[in-house]
Amino acid sequence: MAASSSKSWNNSTFTNGHQVGSRDSKLLQGQNATLQKKVNGFKKQAQSHHTTLDLLEGEVKAFLIDEDELHTFDDLTKVNPVTTTTVLKCLHARYSADVFYTHAGCTLVAVNPFKHVPCLYSLEVMKEYHVNPQPQELKPHVFILAEQAYRNVQGQVEPVNQSLIVSGESGAGKTWTPRCLMKYYATVAASSSSQKCQDMIERIERRVLESNPVMEAFGNARTLRNNNSSRFGKYIQLQLNRSQQLVGASIQTYLLEKTRVTCQAASVKEFSYILSDHEGATEQERLQWKLPVEAQFCWLPNADQTLEEDCFEVTKDAMLHLGITSRMQRQIFRVNEISTAF
Ligand SMILES: Nc1ncnc2c1ncn2[C@@H]1O[C@H](COP(=O)(O)OP(=O)(O)OP(=O)(O)O)[C@@H](O)[C@H]1O
Image (cartoon, rainbow, N blue to C red; front, side):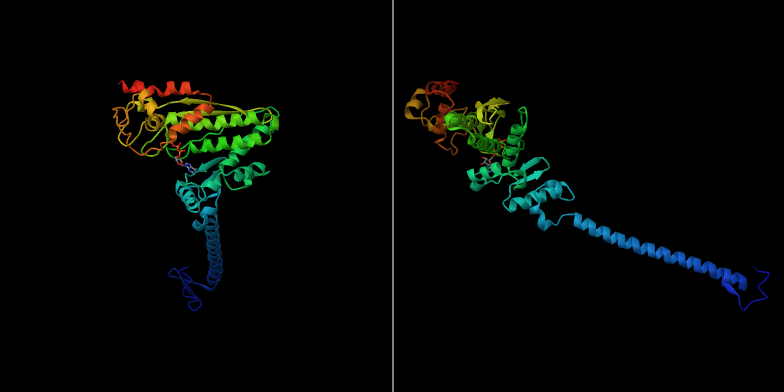
């Protein structure tokens, strides 16, 4: 390159500090054009990447939920992204909109409303879920699961057992939910029955429902988190005949917190039945059980707290319906007489 430089200085061009001739210059121009093309290609590519990125960003935004719309998501698996934060935000938004049930796939999440919501569990609502051919398309509700389990039993050639598991922390509604389920089955599993066995079915339903106040009286107590906390676990079995009528129930209990009978921490209470027995007993019963009104018992340190005094009557009534006679009841309630001896 340096040898030819003196011949054609005018046509020369400098590239990288070297002088070049016209032939080389053409070559160089060609190379420049190729280079320019490549640069343009890169620019186009970059532009299209930019556009792709913009599109992606738009898609991601559309994919991620709009927080203002969170309460409209009736299934937590549809919330994007599914993170602890978005799930909690969704449940919170629904709670604020007075919506207490949300699906999470085949699981139902129930949020304790901490208030009385009578229209949520009325007979009309039960019927609505029971008669609808597609109950799962109605608003999320514990009755959807109840109805699905009921239909699953019905729909099989051979009856197949169905289980509903209720879990959650203390005060979440684990006692409340089976109560609703039992009421639901007591209602729908009787609606198809003939007049002939209606009486018997009604009696069974009543017994099934009356088991709740008895179980709660003997196994529930006030804790720091829940005024009516179950101090035991339970496995409730509802038995249906081949016509899907409720014909019986059995309840197995386990893990009863027996130590509570004689020892309670401050601000928590004895089992409900002992308290209601203590507060609701008649004068005659008090005499019989050696429970003077003003008596103080070391095993009952927190008895002076508020108590629904008619609980005792409700419990006795329910026990009667379950077949626990007044005589048997007296023997059971004599436990206080024995306890006072300590
Ligand atoms: N769906 C609901 N609708 C109205 N009230 C509810 C509902 N769920 C729970 N509650 C209220 O919250 C209280 C606590 O619920 P519940 O006793 O069922 O909790 P839990 O999970 O059984 O607690 P623990 O484990 O302490 O026994 C109930 O006494 C009831 O008043």
